[in-house]
Image (cartoon, rainbow, N blue to C red; front, top):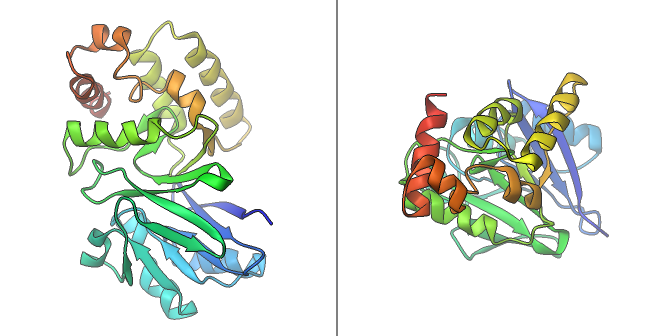
Amino acid sequence: MTLEIHQFPCLSDNYGYLLHDPDSGQTTCIDTPDADEYLRQAKLKGWTITAIWNTHWHPDHAGGNAAIKDATGCTIHGPAEVGEHFPLDHVLANGDRAQLGSHTAQVIDVSGHTMGHIAYHLPDSTLAFVGDSLFALGCGRMFEGTAPQFWDSLTRLKSLPADTTLYCAHEYTKANAAFALHADPGNDALMDYVQEIETKRAAGEWTVPFPLGRELATNPFLRADDPDMQARWGGELPHETFAALRAAKDSF
């Protein structure tokens, strides 16, 4: 049977995710921004939380670890940086795997937002949970990493199959769209995407998840290796163009 994904809003703009394997009955939390809401949603679904997969250490991603573990006895998996701030049972790094029943998630280094940020790619289900490394039409702020590091991380995500469905952690798309239009004017695919976003948000609908293929054509941060973007934003190397875009977004 295929995996079931239960998505729900929590905190001010986070999305929570419960990933459930019907065959084994196992359920993992993707990050833990709001322990009470995760426990409530799991109860509503009739699912027992057996694991937590953290993407990075920020409190709106790992702050609920202790409470959920206390309530369920689950095991907590994530990058080493999580253990410096919150409970962590098993350290994961690039190339490792996380298991949910018979389903395997491949761990990808997507550092840059934080030094240890990871993503979980489930190739058999054509989906990935990317935390704050990549958003629809955006990417995370570069709080801890460097531009070459962050660009390398985005390159790893760019290399996933284009039909991969991406689940990020926040509903930032409308604000990201405004900057994307500023960064990449004249991109017809982007303008069509922005119109769809406006329609969805006006109707109170979510813009997450989203297909990687569309981001490859429209997300300015993923297009930092495009000659037109390099000509517009400067930089002989993609990470230099990425740095210029990230700095511009920070002050936009």
